[in-house]
Image 1 (cartoon, rainbow, N blue to C red):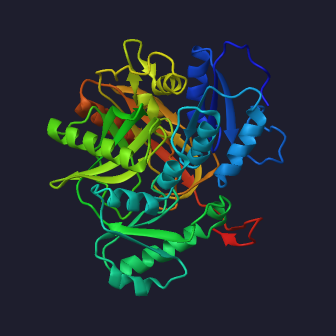
Image 2: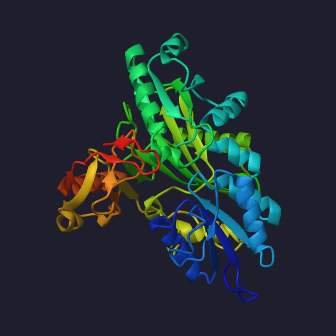
Image 3: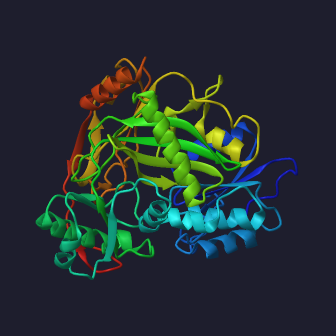
Length: 434
């Protein structure tokens, strides 16, 4: 447990699957605001505070149990607010907020958002624009499912995130290949160790052509507020859907942006989300906006560095802390300057051996910073098996077009080095993996 705090100091509980570069931004913002932060993570409970962070060891696959552990540990000194980073901790955060009477989402709403099938069902029942969809379990024969599918379609696990395991299939043969590949992914030790429910369930839905956008929003007092609309200028057409460039402000016509904002507000309300950050993904075509996914958490990785608010240009992390704790300043608007981020894609799976060209790339006009987050000599997987990027490129330069140009030019300067991974036996399963 954390040491007792001065009575006047606000206390914020942050639940996250791991401590890393995303959490550092919240720690820095909390220090600026003189707020005490307590972390709850899914690290092994048998390890005695291995990182010296005094984090509570939790099992997010059992959110109600995780919440009971938090309540037991923090009953004497309850938090004044709670935030969840990433998808896995969101249901536990909802239970904690409910128990302590804090601003938060209902647990059922958070659990619905965690499962892609449940979310599709709720949105469809509410009349929101979603593609056709079906689901099936991996023990089923994919050849028997083909008669129920219209092509092109997209297959995805119902519980993974970051586009991991999302595959497009254009015909029956491609469908069966995709199922085989996803079965191998979901049965891998790296995924099985998560102990997520419904790991054998796949969602199949219609492929939606069009441009893709993301919304960063904030819900408070039942109202949905748009913080930023990001264009995704790369064509995300498959067969895999690794994201790359986000640029704001959006270059879509004003009426299309309004339609997306209204769709986002209706979707969050239909899902029962009432408090906190929202990250939402949409496709836009001649029929209007289509909901891809709504998540009750902030944008992931280091992407938040593309957002600054108010005349002091405070970070998204500071804005969210202010909102969670009821402090003034959470209503600040995003700065007018265009900004963007590239999540550096993984060109191929292998052992990451380094990157050349960073200094040259950072000298380009408009490029703010390049952060390589992949660790040297670690194995990195390309999509659809992958779920983490090599790093991030940030740019601010005039308008959105200049930002996009700067990001692409910087990426072109980078030369990544990989070596093949030799087959090894996994200690838990005994299986050989490449």
